[in-house]
Length: 314
Ligand SMILES: [Zn+2]
Image (cartoon, rainbow, N blue to C red; front, side, top):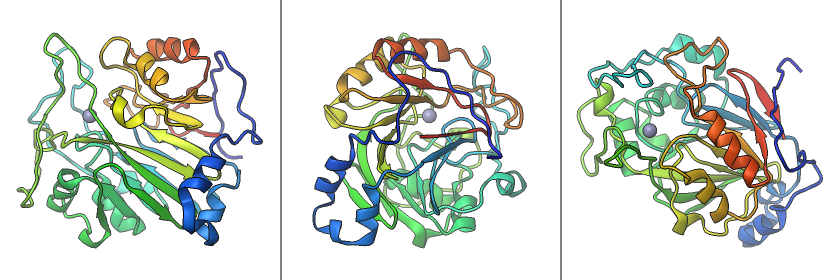
């Protein structure tokens, strides 16, 4: 394999290919679709490769099927993790040359929220790959304003069960993480209705509501969360094998997440790097990783940390 991996094991036992707690539930949820090749494939346990492009940009691949989460690779300087914080006037740029180094194919792109570190490269990636783009009304309006190919956009809001060839996607309501004395997050707001003016600065890319997704691929059920926030009502007793979990947020939020879900085998750290630092160098922890590790260990799950441009296969 051309890719290496670095795994941090804490508590629990390493996942085995034979353990597929999710398969039965998937088949039940698939219902009438189980007769089709696509739905039948979903329950078969096959290797699933996770490649990290920093922030919440993941390429999740099983055989020829590829799903991307919030593919943001251009990484312009914002000051987000500096003492001064992000400069709201920072211009949005998207670099096809950088994206082309990493992105080849994709069948679906899962948009989790509208912020500048998640959305700006989606139009180019969508056009390049012809992937279906899932997002809510605001996410899709911001993408239309950024000249995304509108016929590839699929509006979701939470509750959807979407069978694709080779995988399924379930959509869940979520919330952005917040913090500080006032429990705030950056650039709140929505853009329903008409398509807004073309976003120019990072402040134009409002959060727009947050979604969570469960991707079932290669018999593995993967919960993808783009921030530390989650909606307990939406995720209560949810059964998944893997969680992509971000550090940060209110104290104890990850402990509450892992208590809300049915016991999880593996947690993969996401969104833990300072994205003002380059993608082609080792990731620089902005300071949240150790707390995330502690919470995952307390829950008895395996904790996996993948470095920039590295992969892990489950
Ligand atoms: Zn965000």
